[in-house]
Image (tube, rainbow, N blue to C red; front, top):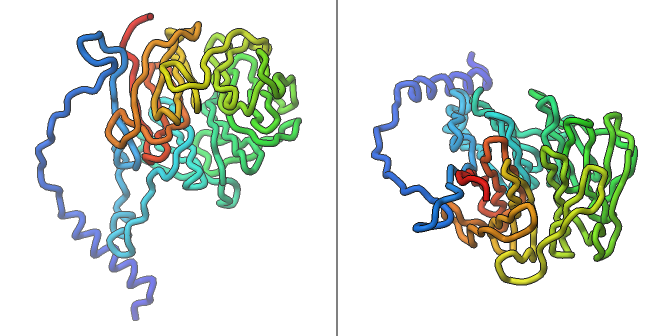
Length: 343
C-alpha cells in the first residue's frame, strides 16, 4: 500500500521526469539600446545595468524538487515585496524587505536564494537599514523591534546584538572597518549613536533642532572609506556631513521642487570619486552632487520602466561604482554604474 507521503513523492518524481525532458524553445532576444545619463550629446556618466525582483532575474534557478512542487501545489513566489535597503558583497546581494518581513540573500555564485528571519523563524517586521561588516557579516536595523541584528556569512538567522544603549527607532546604519565601530541613526531620538566593538556606547552626536549638527528626524547614513559620515536629515530637508568624531562639516539641500532640493531624501552614498548620490522619494529620482554639495545631475522620474522609480528608498554603491537602488513600490532593485571620470 502506498502511503499519502509516498504518493506525493511519486507524483513529484513523475513530474520531475517530465520536466527533465522539457527544454524551452529558443527565443529571439530583442536588442535594447543602452540607457545612459545624461542623454546625448553630453558625455554619458551613468549607465543602466539591470533590474531584479526575483532570484531568476539574477540567474538563480529554482531547484528540481521546487519546480516539481510548483506544478503540484502552485508557485510560491520568492521575489521582492517592498525592498527598503540593499548591500552588495561580491556576488552576494542582501535586500532588506519589510514586505516579506525578512532579509533576502541572493548568492549568484552558488545559485542560491534565502529569506532570512530572526531566531526560530520570527519575522523582522521593519528591516530598514543594512551595513556591511569587516568579515562578510551584515548588520540589520529593525525600526519596529528597536533592535540591531547581525547576519554572519552563511547563517540562516539574524541574531540580535547586545548594545549598551536603548534604541528608540534605529534606521540608518554604517560600519567603520578600521575602528570596528557601528554607527546607528536613532530617528526618534534625533541623534547618531556610535557603538564600540564590544557593543558599548562610545559616543553620540546630534539633538533635535535646525542648527548645524542638529537633526529633525534623521534617517539614513553612509560612511566613506576616508571616514566622512553623510546623514539624511529628513524633516530639515537636507543632508549633513560629519567627521569620524561626529563634528559637523557641511550641509546641503532644502525644501523645494527644483534641482538640488531634497524634499524627501532617503538613501545616501558616495562613489570613489567623492560624488554624493541621494535618493529622493518625492521626486522618484536619484540626484548627484559633488563633495561640496554642488548639484550635478538628476535621473529618474515616476514610472515602471528601467531607469524610472516609484518611491525609491535605500541606496548602496560598491567598490566597482555599481549603484544599487531599492525601488520600493516597483518591487525591485535597479542597478546602475558610474562610468564617467572625476567631476
